[in-house]
Every structure is written in C-alpha cells, then in structure tokens.
Amino acid sequence: MNIECNMLYNFELQMAGIILFSAMIAGGIAIWYRRRRALSEGEDGVRDASENL
Image (tube, rainbow, N blue to C red; front, top):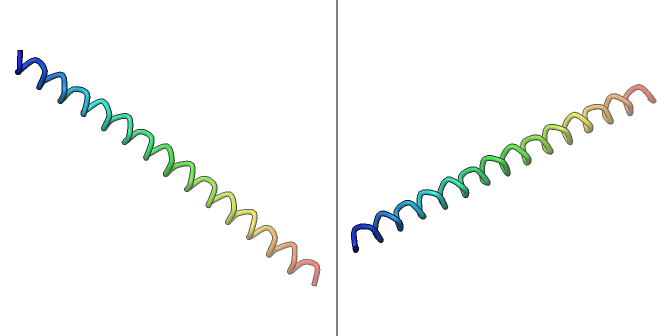
C-alpha cells in the first residue's frame, strides 16, 4: 500500500511540474511577444519623429 501511495505522489508531483513548466513557457512567450511588439512600435515612432523634422 505504501508503494502505491508513493507512486501516486510522484505522479502528482510530475503532473504539477509539467503544468507549471508549461505555464512558465507560455508566460515567457507572452512577455517576449509584448516586448517585441513594443520595440517595433517604438521604432515606428522614432521614424515618424525623424520624418517630421
């Protein structure tokens, strides 16, 4: 009985790790995308400012 509980506990920890790892990857991609979009908008703003001079 103790071995079955230990295996279930290990399985639960592995599933929690997979879920947390997936969430960290998704968050990293979201941050990267927002930063990339903000940088591209900033470059467009710099181009517009230089054209107005």
